[in-house]
Length: 436
Image (cartoon, rainbow, N blue to C red; front, side, top):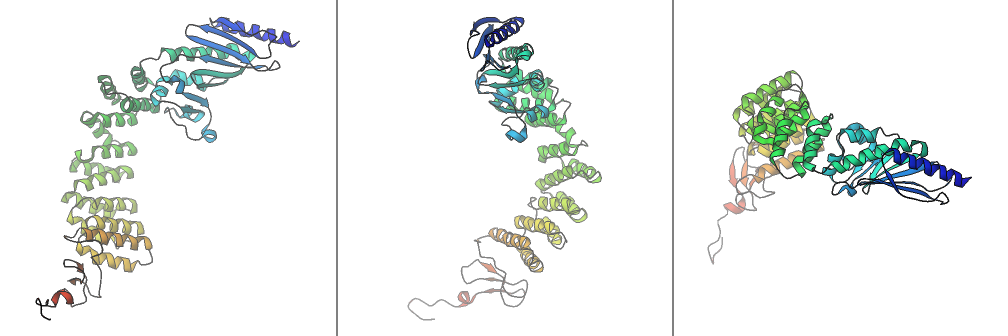
């Protein structure tokens, strides 16, 4: 009975491989405990195996002479929850969620075009790629359906020999924007520069996806500036903000403030923050005025961004609006103002910082920020060294040279506004061989 069943199984397998145009090149006997049938068509070799005579399931293996490195590619069906984050993502969310992918990024992006992803994603059996083989676990009645799928995949893989051209085709034609972007990135970052790559980037600047247009324009450099300008002025907050940051100082003050005005009006916070960063990088008096206005008039998030930007201006005029911000009720804003003063503040900012620390002494985050800011201001003083600036005495405005070294500054205990030397510095030095 078992031999008869094994004979029928082998006959079914032979019919399936013959229907696919394969020639049988080897087979076990029906009397063998483990059945195996080998077939071939061109460069593809196929094995159909079963480990137990009572099984109704079989394993189909297609050995594929794919491109160099193909044996390193591993693709198996496995959800994110089961297998964690995959090593590689194609940019096709449905496919990436269903499969775990490993291997060289260039090969993975080249192989997994739209057709291949569709074949793997909607296969009725569990198909995986490992060690240069396509493998599927299935039942005997489904072999006639699964075998053509494996052969189709195998032939597609053997035809892919020009890595660069395959990446270009995927970057320009794949229906998924994420896949187009993934292929474009791999093309630029992992392949040698070439005229084909430059041309692909220029074409991608007209892609229907703003994400693809943005990335291509940034990579093109000056040639992509016009595309970035359009994206910076677009209504899509995320892409607009990224374009503004990519342009940086290439945006004029007038254009930056115009984009900022529209962003504030439409509450596009990301774009507004990017504009504030750009203004901070310019450091002009006009920029300081614009930032101070946002710091004074806007809510916490934008005010914090304005304070941070003021700290990057390197302009002394930024100190006053930051000092005023120390009296605002929001802790995070005060801390941001303190840190900004640490970057651009003068000695005149030390006492207001100290007063703020006393006023909000129960807020350790602010107190620590004040200490750090004072240390940074001190470090910028000519001839200063760490620890020299201190806040001594009860009255404001008093400076003296401390006993440690000439050139050190502290708030002394003399009359307000008095500049004095310490006792050691006033006392005349004894003449050689004499007494004071």
